[in-house]
Length: 200
Image (cartoon, rainbow, N blue to C red):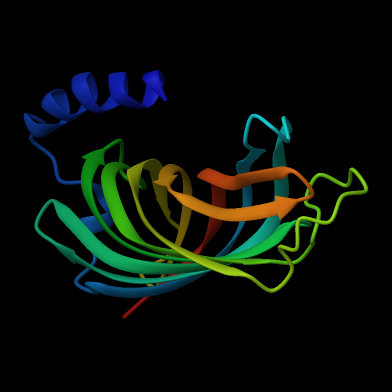
């Protein structure tokens, strides 16, 4: 996380003074749609009485659409993450600043914000033999964070995108198991993604 902030603080001011445009702006095709794969990780934890926590990790697909405008690009993406413990839908709108890196390469750094919806798949997400009664419960949360990545211009129509994002979330559910009355939380998302954009 700190490395990402350092990148935003030092790289963006330098890029702002670059004379050449990012390669992603060379094409007159300003709109794009894309699809890719992502590896997503979140942290799941219970309150002090239950006393359990752990990271959950899985691979998933991401779909996106957006438009280039000046040195910026903006758009929306949708990701459905099927963790063992829960299914999470994440829809985010984002705004990126483009950084020139060469004739075929561009970097970007940006912000994202949106909505997350979680549906618990297991009564006991910690597999500890307890019945927290979570299965089927749904929670909603805002989400916001930072993103960085790179773009490779393969042809005028096809572009490869590589990226990383960190999103804050606040998903939590109350549960009761005997004398235990606590909450279980599903915090944040770290995702590495790679995919293809089709420009038009």
